[in-house]
Image (cartoon, rainbow, N blue to C red; front, side, top):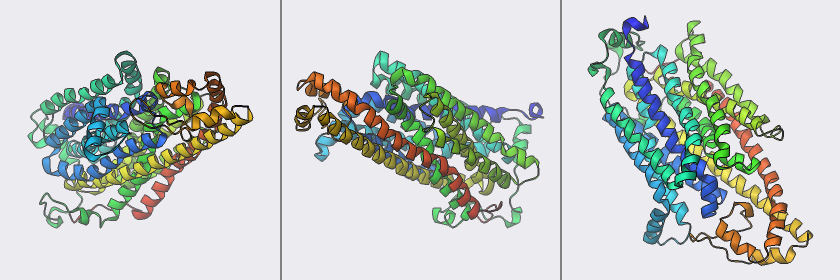
Length: 523
């Protein structure tokens, strides 16, 4: 059957897969260089949280407009503009500090130029990346019948995991050999290569010369008719956001994204930091653990897209079968609760459990996206995905800010305990002297030793402290490091608990809003 009708739609799926791979490659470079950059610029956890939150906030806002723009420009042009913008945004990270200095001079800001610069670069990156999923979901709706959409979505969505796998295998090596700025530039430039293939091979199915008549008929004939043609609302190509917000189906998707998107971004942006904070792993040492973790996620994405087919074959409507599958998927993240209690055995234990959590997220993601095309007409898909994406971005900002607040708070608690123990160990004079110092990095960023562990500050600041007493510094380091590590373990336990429970909460709310399959028929 597949051979008779043709397979060109899977070529489109491959293009979407590679675009999503590039999307996540660009997105993850910063998290892999966090350890290096925070030592250079002496960032606090809240500084890093603010930088990543800027990405998520911008992503959230423009996800709303991206869906609308994709609907109006069309998939081909809209996707092309998106990848051009996000590739430029990725590349300019290499010049974040001078960008921050220039903006700081204009607005009169003093210090923290690196934070300002990276926030601007992340905003540009997010502006473009916001177009990826609205365009990809719209392309899937154009090229695939409903019964294949979740599987196709699972395949292209697994590109996120391939990007997450490739990033730790390439970024630390590029940074080590050519510098962190070059890592941003090389990875960012890959998007322009994809753009060539997109422009050559993509066109609407009705205009696609490479698509056989049999395959086009298969796509169109397999589309479930939502309402009789004479009862359908006129298709004027425009759908009001306010109109979409009157539907429970929109809110179900929106709440589902709000509750769960931030969990994936937490794992994406903070997992390298977790391995550093709890196991002292940096640079190339995180390559294999992260690659294994995101390999789990790739398997989850593909298998999660296939899973609802089991229920659909048993006679369930597409949405009802998908919701049954999503309930089972939502149970798997509960294993993340065991990451910290059993983490003393080996770093592989939390990597394994978090890997299951990321697999569950990607399986969930493949299905929650497809609930939109299950119930909305094609002309509204981009806009609904945009609304949900905005909610997911806001949820991501919330999770990131909570994480930054917790990590800074528990770091400060560990640091405070270290001052007490250091004084008890006879280092009181040294502690008083270093706390009285006005410490500034060579980049102009101030360092507060009450908020920052001494093993996570820049080398030039460490040298300033060592001038006071190098032997006392080494003793302080030995006292402070395990105390901060212990406090951070508590902070990560709290965050992992949030991650574990988010999917069940999302499913309950979604099921309450839309208990049964109910397609939209009046748009």
